[in-house]
Image (tube, rainbow, N blue to C red; front, side):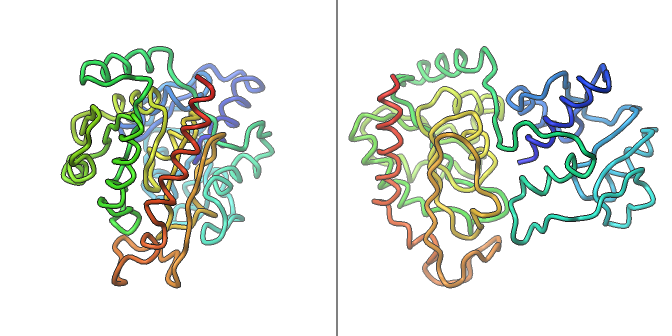
Length: 312
């Protein structure tokens, strides 16, 4: 969700400030994600280099301290977390995350610095070799790349955001009856959920949960015809690169964290307790997800796949 803000900052400094090198610093998985972010002139570094300027997207004290420790001359970021004295430019919080989209929160960083934003939506790119690698991997597992759909049944930060595995199974079973071939993506802990979803599926399928790197998972998404998933990071990537994406929302608020992309369908049937923003559901029956029937999800997927098939 920070991609539009990062792109605006990169473009501005490369075009107008003659910046020769832009580094993205952070956790190692960012190295796999960077080729999709479409950030001109940017390379990944796990540690912060001695730089002229750093823009902080995390709100933590630690991020500001590490920049100062690395000898960064100017450090720009939002105030808070007792880090104001570490910042060269301490920006006020003008966007409230409790009721506005996270993307706008990040976009307010360049806005406060008078950096123009040409693209406010998330628009990612697909690396040249990504689809080729995906098709090869699909074929190695007996799948036809033209018929592959991806399902990501997990989500970070707890199960409250997750649609029931049996509901996903019903949807995937019906899609398989129409000839679509499912791949389950996720962490090792999602393997059992994937087994439930794929039980008795007649078409070729692959439970890849825990068996791919992030880079490989991103390639499979890029080569697929549909992404069915919960509110997650993979959802934002799929939507951003233009893959038809269907997502049930319940514990989280689509007004704040929905993906942006040309082919997105969000299903949100809030319960009285929605959005609770909790890690685990404490209400019997998980009503926010129960309100979204498998038929609703199936219809959304078939509508998306119908549009996708028209473009083949």
